[in-house]
Image 1 (cartoon, rainbow, N blue to C red):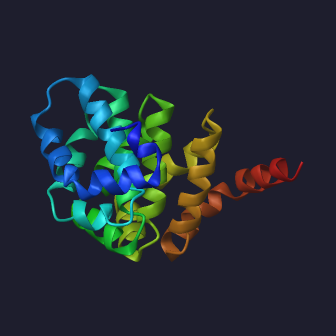
Image 2: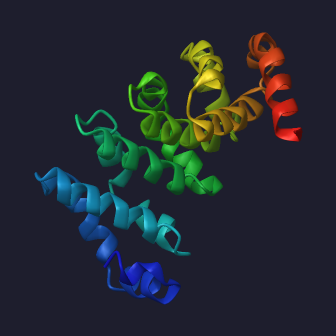
Length: 195
């Protein structure tokens, strides 16, 4: 199915076959990490389909993805965060993800030992921070110092995702004040990108 989903008609065909609901059930039933990784990867690809988000939001997908944010497998944590980021691509998905209380575990992932996990968590948070409730929740969790530290992450994608997260959160005045501490680093990054 992953190979079939490389094409838009494949994605549509799989979604039309009511596979999403089965995949959501497998998020709980599957015990093998390797298969769970494949399920999460397929789900993430299918989220590129037009109807996938609305169909998934009629299932317990958010609670089940939240469970996997603390998995012992770094790849499962990464893919769970990526799926939350993809689900929150539109406003309906953002609201549902915030209501499912996905922000606290995603914020805890900002200090994950694995850079791929941090990058995925920051990307999902940047999407959720586009709504006022998301910005406020990230601020209230007192995670802005962790966000600023990620500007120094060794991984370039994590740093870029962090700039997006800061831009989204900085629309909230108390967060904007806090992020003034990072102005020099942001200017330095902007200069490097020019050169």
